[in-house]
Length: 113
Image (cartoon, rainbow, N blue to C red; front, top):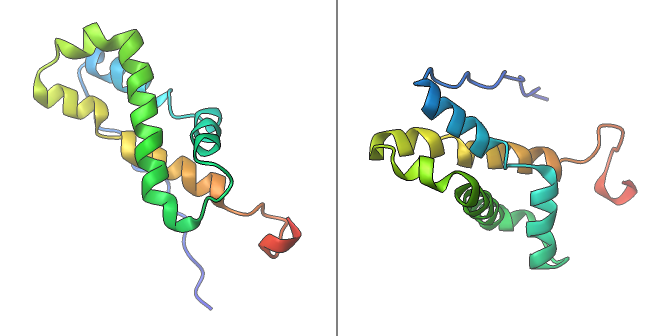
């Protein structure tokens, strides 16, 4: 049986301070509570095959909320800097979803959790 090696997350690239601050603020919007809210909007029939849809909805919800607070600052950035701000959003959402959908460590099967 192969054991999957744990790799530390890749460090985020160095950015100008204003771009890094906006990126950090955006990533702070990716929370377990927001994920639960997105899931509750979809109902209880969530399947692992819905992963891409969940990531998309979570990132859209986080970005919409971020824009309410930081839209003015974000909109004055160059297109390249905007991409740097939003670049880690999908990966961050995917990481949260992976943790959220994983069974607890003490469980040996889903049916007993």
